[in-house]
Image (cartoon, rainbow, N blue to C red; front, side, top):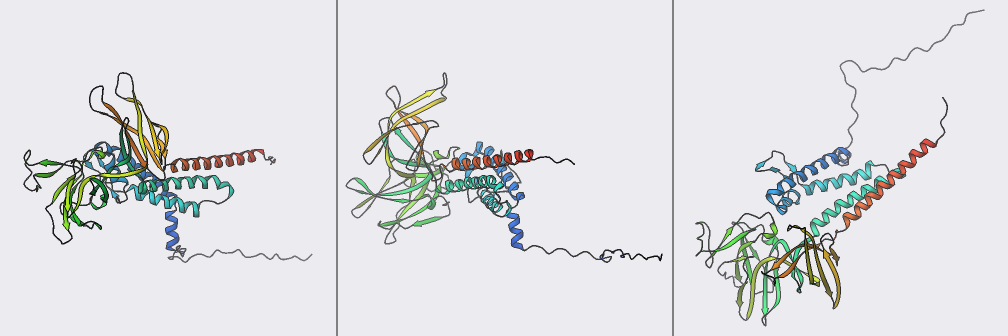
Length: 422
């Protein structure tokens, strides 16, 4: 039987790169794609959360010495791009991005991550909902920062008020007096004052008035002293026998007493002698122009309520043997358009109405002795996003609940499948 020859396929020799050469690199993705990947990456999210933790920690420590308001402005104001933390009296060589911009970048990271990186199947529904809740929480913080107002209202028992006073913002009020009563009030807001140091003068045009004003040398916290009681330093100028003596900011910034120098500029260009304005002055300056009378005063900004609050009864309870309050209760009557509604404001139980929240903040005793009247101090907050944090936490909870239920169903299905023998 003739032998048959076997035909075999020669082995394939892999192609190799010649010695001394490198394999070609894969082309880099476009810059926009790389930037998008960085902004939506998990690594950036982790870094931002660590930075927020450090900012919160340093701010909490610094608040002890600098006060809450000053610390919040340093660490979380939109103007704070870079922050240098401080421990005690020593600055740390650790520059950090400001909290405002860190949160803004975190919002971008979470939004892009949810859009481009996270799966869109039904199994990811709970995670996507929780993601949306966190984004809503960040938006609530931004809205509160830019749109909220905080002030206080002091009302004695039996008294009423419809005006709240801002904690921090100073304003110059020019009031025209007609027939012995205030007629029209012109307000120069705090943004025209707070950046005026001893080298800057700002001219403010006042339409409708027979004069304008120059403002200068604003001090966030200062005393007005008389020359006869305490001579001023050599480099300090006095006006009408008084001068401004700056003092350190208090830890409770709402107790600061701002002051500044002002001057009236007539329409013909004539400039009057400068004068001092301060929140510690109880009587405003009176200015006459022809047959018109005006008063000028520096005070914390006041804003009107759309209703009136009357304090009917105030009750304070303390822990036995101490002056530590256990309960403050204010029985009030809210009057609006002739309609009266009774309400109770107490610790941890505020009154929310017409976009404003009234908290029981403190109390005062007006006068001495058994006949002294009690007064209640309400903190008034106007915040369009007041309830948004609660809503966002509910959304996050709902998302996590859906996610855990879906995972539980998947686990039960995997255990219930029949196992095949090998």
